[in-house]
Image (cartoon, rainbow, N blue to C red):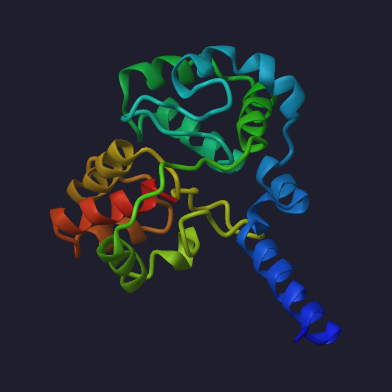
Length: 209
């Protein structure tokens, strides 16, 4: 016995809506918001030195180096400024950031990485990590699976699909106060209520998104 055409149409509509929701962060309008006012075409060539560590498309394979693919351009720029003024510390990044004093060049480089397909990790299943992530309210800033709040919120980075080792270090640095560049001040409060095991589990969950 066949299904009524109306039922099939409704089912297809639901499937399409689900697919649209799942990949909403790749919508051209959302990508445009991520890019900001830079020129990603010009930024591709300007980002040559950055690609040595972060990868051709910002999909860094070295565990302790962050992926930049699909990251908010404004967030990338803000981190460069932090290295320039000394509120973030890393020998290589501090040295490189000192050469990025031209605001247009920096905006273009950030736009190039922001225009790439969103970072993704090797799928993992860590129910405990997901539970902690949601229980701590992390989705309110970073999105349900860490892909950000693309329509309006470049204040907080995309973390879903990020390298696990990098995530671990950043959360530990926020916990110890080594890193204090979160404008909202929320990260320090949250991670200080997490055990090292919690941080490990959340990092594992996010790295597989």
